[in-house]
Length: 273
Image 1: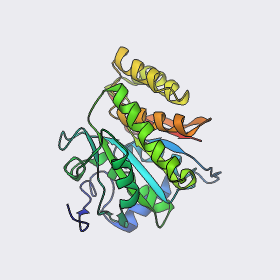
Image 2: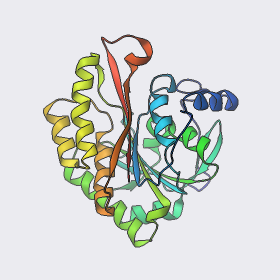
Image 3: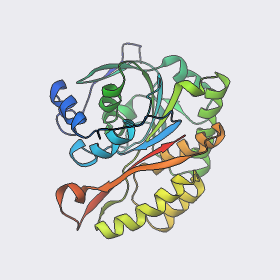
Image 4: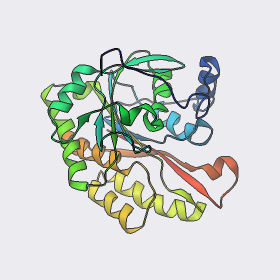
């Protein structure tokens, strides 16, 4: 995999507009008028089509001073590639332009991890990280990314990877330059009532910054949260980095948009400081 590796957008025109002006217009339509920005260590963002989850993701990122380096943590929906996949070289392209991978940081994280493997196959057709990029680009012109995708529910390994990422951040003294963004939708295709009840349990665990509690809730209550693995990695990392405060910016379901409450998908936007 050479440094010329360009990952083209695969869900532009489906999950979000493929025209730059239209895309900016849609993003701006979801922003609330008065926003206080904060310095966040991490966040949880949904990754469905913008029509459904865009409001949650956009209002969450609107409150964050976007950092120069963003470690993107997402689930692997495609089944391609290795279980713990980091892309260390190249760039990702969206209708709003190109974003470079922070090769130096990515390679340091790869070197510092027992579990991560350099792999682009997991990322090429995966939408969970791509959909966050145009929103990040809307709020900040220049930043670099480290894309990591997870296809495992091994709690101890996920927590160790979180610690490994945090150790690299501390060793390089870049705590103030890095934002960890975990991409996940919440409950899938259950009634509004059931989705809200299950998602409340997962969100409580995240707000307590408790990866074990989140894992237990997901397993015991059969919560179909697709990105709980990346969220566990993020929680483990911020615990190592000394995070103190977390807040729920917004929760809604697809039913709030479509009016169909019989079968919804839940979306949560959370900030960790």
